[in-house]
Length: 79
Image 1: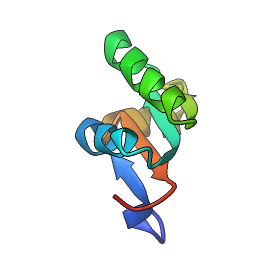
Image 2: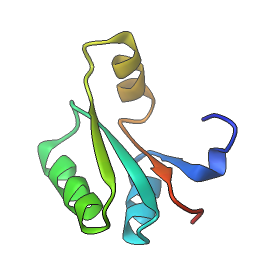
Image 3: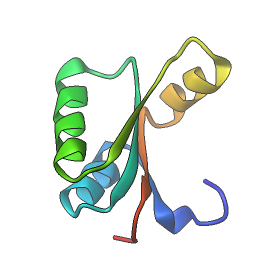
Image 4: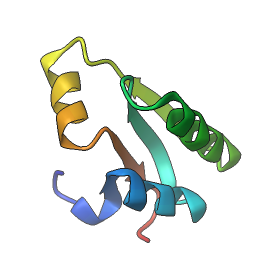
């Protein structure tokens, strides 16, 4: 996760927690995740002014993201 792993989340639980604190700068969601969960997370992100990026699985990188975590975020501050 790069040089600052403490400034990113991976997975539903950690990312949702960061969204609750308003700590997410950019939310990343795989296009293949459950629509209900996607809508919930996008709404949380919009309520805190976070950017949202939907990651396609039509590329090797997008498929890798889906297989690793499906959900992740870059943070504004540590939680």
